[in-house]
Image (cartoon, rainbow, N blue to C red):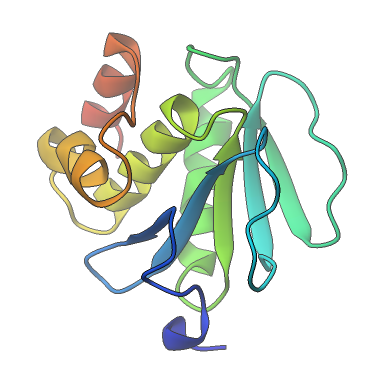
Amino acid sequence: MTVSATWDPTAAGVLRLPSGRLVRGRGLRRPLPPGPQPAFGLYLLGHRPPAVPWASRWLRWPDFRLPADRAEATAALREAWERAASERVELACAGGLGRTGTALACLAVLDGVPAGGAVAFVREHYDRRAVETPWQRRFVTRFH
C-alpha cells in the first residue's frame, strides 16, 4: 500500500504530516467512521481497549495525564509513525483530543515539525482543541 492509498486526506480527523503521511485521530466514544478500516491502531487509554479486527497496540495512558511508561510511549509512537508511511494508521483515546492530540503532535515531531511548534501544527490541521493540558504540551516539547 502506498501513502496515497491510505486515508482520504479530506476526511474529518485525518492529519496530513509534512512528509505526506496520513494518520487518523479519533475518539473511541464515537462510532467507527465510514470508509476503510485501519491496518494498525494505537489506543491511548488507562485500561485495555476492546479487541479490534486489525493490528493494534495499547499504550497505558490515563485520561488528562501522560503515558505511564515514556520509553514504551516513544517506541509505540515511532511504530505508528513508521507504519503510517505505507499503512492506514489511527490513534485514538476516549474523546480524541487530549491524548490523541498529544500523540499526533509527537508524530509531527518525528516527521520534522519543530517540537515547539508541533502542538500549534496539530491544532491547525487536526482540531483546535487538541492537546488539553499543560503537561501534555510540555510532553510534546520534550519529545524526541
